[in-house]
Image (cartoon, rainbow, N blue to C red; front, top):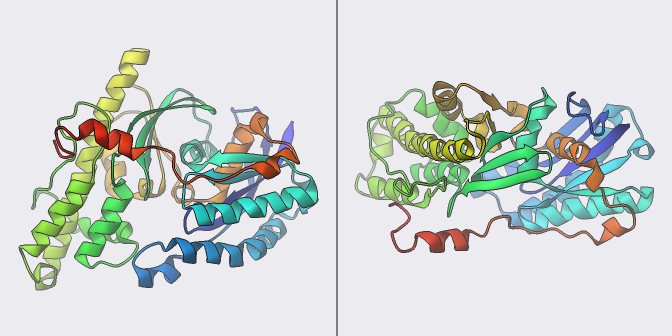
Length: 361
């Protein structure tokens, strides 16, 4: 049965809405994306050096209604033709999440439409199906500003966490490292560009949980190591451009090496379950990084990447995942009781596991 789905994403700073059409339950064909519009707060947040939750929530509020109308106009359909609304409810910043959820509830109330609460981390990986169908099971590597984790994906509704960061995410390591180097915001893109001009072996930075023997990450020690490096070398970044390029390349390579090492452990778990390594799917905002993509292609035969335009938080991945899990739709008026939640993983539990040996062991 063909369904027309509206997707709303406001988990952090990007306001994004998409409308797509596809056959519910048919996983052999990618849906048709009718319209997909986003508003980035990058220019607004650049002066703050990062995301300010209250500002992000207020800007979602200002942009959601006109963005919704523009998306409907671009798709050449009316709200009455929508069959289902998918909306991000977790995880993320609570203020922005509630802004998007309340918009979805209002649309449901007016049009008597069902809602699907979406875990946008799952949606990030399943966005691989927006451009081409992908078989199950696969090993999902999610790399973003707030999360870095491995997920064993056995079906649209079957996700198992195999490993996660116990502190900072890879995206945070980029942004916080960039701030220490005075590179501006968003730093991930800048570091990736500068690293192409530098020597990635020039300086040595640590890999968190290097000897843990599992698929968990730690990036907080890397950030501390960079701070120590810069404090010991006043004016280092201003001496010459090559210093900047070499430091970015070396710092980034520590993140890449951590992902490389931990992917080996995640694949070991997959091999124990299935008797073979699984295809890898990488998604999330940091999945646009050229060096991480290069590393995975160098080391693994079957790797798929979510298309760059669907890597950052976006409405298309939300609508897509809603279509793939349409049987989980909550009918009106029950859906009006939905709530948002900020957390997905309890990092305190993971941290406690390593307290006896230290995060950088």
